[in-house]
Length: 183
Image 1 (spheres, rainbow, N blue to C red):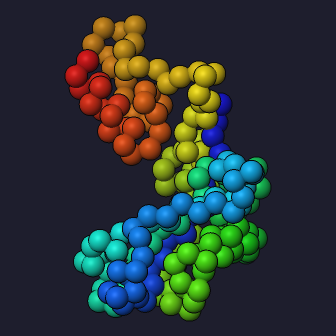
Image 2 (cartoon, rainbow, N blue to C red; image 1 turned 90 degrees about the vertical axis):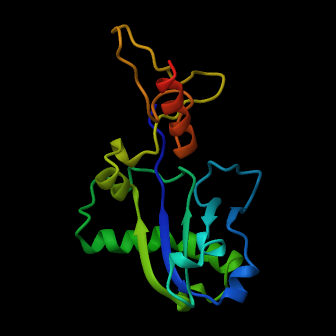
């Protein structure tokens, strides 16, 4: 089964070293635990690498990445031309939840501090990451299925990547590569 996609917000913003020292590098924000992390507009993951590495942005600036954890439906995007006004409006509407979470967690005035903003959508995932329907990858549920291991029926042909064990995400793909290299 195909997993859902994401909304992303990449922001370059004004921040002093003292302000960054008050922040953590990573946050997971949940509005309502009863709705679960897979509910739309309920969870956001935030990474602020400038907390640990001041060379990632010019002096007095910082960078962050906020995103929804594979909760964005592709069907609202699939028939929209990404060069259209409709696309720009939908990007603004669907990134609003991310902005509100950043205002609660990072800085209440983050929008006015923002100097560079990029919004990623399911169409961004589809175009630049070559992901079917902008998905994060296979939506295999624990206990109902598993990712295949690297072996194949063809002698000497092994598989690796986010569609193999242990699954999707950078750490899992690195693990998949190690498993394949040592098979």
